[in-house]
Image (cartoon, rainbow, N blue to C red; front, side, top):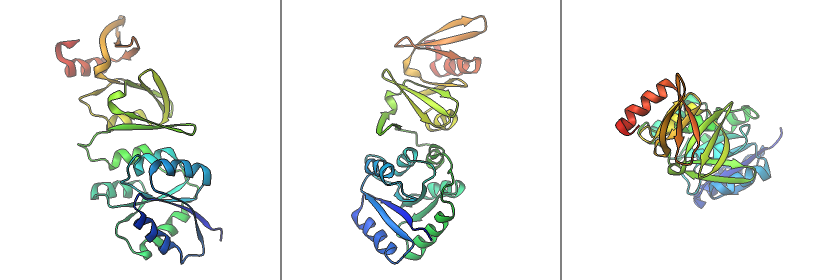
Length: 249
């Protein structure tokens, strides 16, 4: 049997030690890399091409969900987490395995055996999993985008607008435009509706960037942003904008 190449990602050294010890009895796995934070994990995943990540959820710099968004989707992932019940239900729904800290060696081995069966499968989109695991009252605070080898973190208040482009979204921020593989609907569900509004089926805008609404044709309008960008506005989008902004438009 081919050895399973495993990468351990956890910011706690003791947690990494426990995983190493539990794995040391198995002849069918090898640890190809260990990482103490999310940035290291994204780089190491590209360099070492692991079969499986044992991935902590709560980490500084990049959390486990953000790492998952930035690695190839065919890498199997087992979350290692002290996360709450809501998140665990989301993992169940999306068939992502998890180890709830503290866990036994037997539980780890069972998770690895299940992960081996799923090797090479394309998992549910990472952004969809992250959105499902987030409590309804908790909104996205930043967006992570991988552009080649570079990881860009966009604080949510710096987001100008988002435009759907087939299986991707174009993210506009401070004059920059980046592509991310995610549906516009899943991103919309993660944003605070008091600050971000679906102007059109293909556009979400930061309402603070809207300078004015202008007629475009007899039955349509455009939103003009502070930097001059023009975005389409549907009838429903205009109604939502009027409701949100009141007499300001």
